[in-house]
Image (cartoon, rainbow, N blue to C red; front, side, top):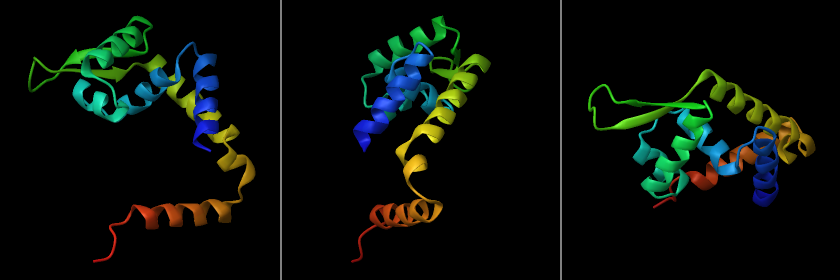
Length: 124
C-alpha cells in the first residue's frame, strides 16, 4: 500500500514538475517548520534541505525569510503558487488513492480506529 501511495504521489508531483520529495516538502512547509525541522520531518540532512528549498524558491513555490525572533534562522513558506500546487496534489491523492476509491466510509472509520489503537501507548 505504501508503495502504491508513493507511486501516486510521484505521478501527481510530476504533473506539476516536481519530485515526490519536493511535493512532500511543500506539504510539510504548510506547518511552518524551521529548516532544521523540515530536515527532521523529511529524514534528510539540513544541507540537502537547504538545496531543496532553494530549488523550490527558484520555481516561485516557496519564499525563504528570516525569523522575526532570530535573524540567523531562515524559514521557508509556500507562496500562493506553492499553495495551489499543494492543494492540487492533495486533491489528486484524495480522489485517486486506494483508500478513497476502494474503501467505504465505514471501512475508513474502522481503519482510523485501528491505527489510533496502534498509535496509543501500550498498557503497563
